[in-house]
Amino acid sequence: MTTPQEEHALLPATRRALLHRIAVAQAEGRAPSLTAAVVRGGELVWTGSRTSVNGHAPDGDVQYRIGSITKTFTAVLVLRLRDEGRISLEDPLEKHLPGTSAGGATIAQLLAHTAGLAAESPGPWWERTPGSLRPELTDVLGDDPLLHPGGRRFHYSNPGYTLLGALVEELRQEPWERVLRREVLEPLGLHRTGSDPVAPHAGGWAVHPWADVLLPEPVEDLGRMAPAGQLWSTTEDLARFAVFLARGDDRVLSASSVAEMRTPAAPPEPGDLAAGSGYGLGMQVQQWGGRRLVGHSGSLPGYLANLSIAVEDDVASVVLVNCTSGLSISTVGADLVRIVAEAEPRIPEPWRPLPEVDPDVLSLTGPWYWGTSPFVLRMTADGGVSLDPMGAPGRRSRFRAAGDGSWIGLEGYYAGETLRAVRAPDGTVTHLDLGSFVFTRTAYDPAAPVPGGVDEEGWRGLGQEG
Image (cartoon, rainbow, N blue to C red; front, side):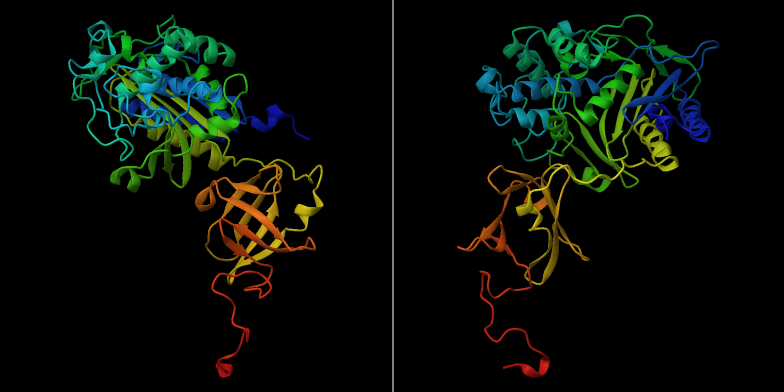
């Protein structure tokens, strides 16, 4: 019997592979410093760093600027408002924050970057100039911020998250950063995350493209744009945040709400579709080598950051560097997850029988047919059911119990659709109805209603044609 610590601890070969990967990234990317962490099973299991300076390399307590990972924190605050019933994601912004030139955009569209807003604030470049130059939302949006019809396409927008931060401030009647600290940072124990750097923190640098020399980058307070990219954090804090984004925490957001954030919510651009990337509600969704990763990347002058989570593998990585460009930090983050997931695959929980069984549901399990296509209905550990095709591609879904003897689809084609057992007057089940599709115990059961009817002569061989 192993202890939880022994189950989560990485093997020496895996640790060396992780160190080798960040060492190559720091050397080839010419980063002044790079620090990284890996989480498995909800615990921090590895940290590593490389630096160009002699002496102590940065550890998990050193702050770096995390850029657009800030957007995920802002999205959490918005989802909290939704879960409290203060807003609906389908509400237009104007309902809660009147007077902006983007009031017709829904809150969901702003979260998913589908509101049609411009990618950036009008000049000068907001990342390299004081936020005091843009004191009002009108300064952030400009005269004509809408470039595309709302809801039609994914177009990443920093001003969109400024609006979401302003929405939080309007409904909480407090500054965004204060709300964030009280509602997210303190409950999750993210004591080294905040709007301003607190020593120890890494300085930001630009590296000359053709020579091994450095230029210090400015550190600006983003002002109104803070909800889009202001935060500083550490690998240890972001490791805790990764656990939250994978599992939820009822003090902040439920597991179902963070799962909603991880679900694609925006139509991808053609290039993104080919690359296997999408966007949820404040979270990037990507396919890397057949593995689904969620999280976010970030950049500001002098800093790059990445948070990658493979929920199915129960592995996450954090990578922070203090240079403006030079390495693909998302690739490094994905590689750290891959190294652990492939070298030490997740050990499943022991199988256990269900604590209790509803005999009526149990009687429905087993094979069913949609026309001639076989499916199997199973009970699931969470009290729901699943319907899966047998031996051939087809539509599959999990269903949650609705409380009235029916089930609601959770994914795919049947998401939101109702599955119910239809009974004869004597109480026997004649068929399953799934959004008007009829599933029967035998293929084209003549005793069940099958749209189009069943030939009275039944099944026949080639020589029996009428």
